[in-house]
Image 1 (spheres, rainbow, N blue to C red):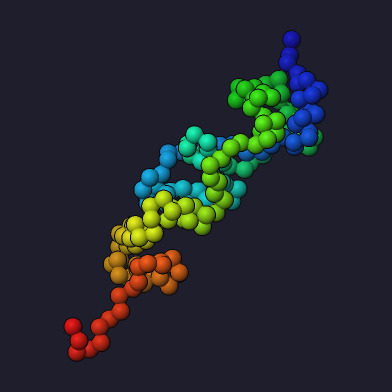
Image 2: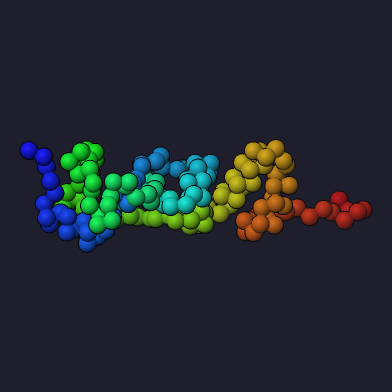
Length: 169
């Protein structure tokens, strides 16, 4: 006999507007070094993407993208043939029922992540690695990259070297 949703399930989905069907999350490697944080920063440069750290310290990329099988009444149009992952959702795992998920941190913008990286690595290491890695990638000197990043307001501790006046050493 085909499985159909209980009335309470349908009402609950209408009430919360199918939150669980409006995004998906993928676990990502926990960044530890500057270049790994830069990968996460790249994710956040895209529309409808967030990153969060869950209550266990695991990192996830969340893509806000509505399921194509969710109708205007927030009901699943393929309920009897829905994927196994959808079938695993229960009252105990429903985001609306458990009043959201507990995140240690949530990032919506590259700037929010940058602030976290400064806090995690320390401002000096963050700036040094930014200069070093961007200079290496763009094949310019660290002095030139320091100038560029300083002009963008990205550096707080590292200052560009000023040329010595003629006749001084």
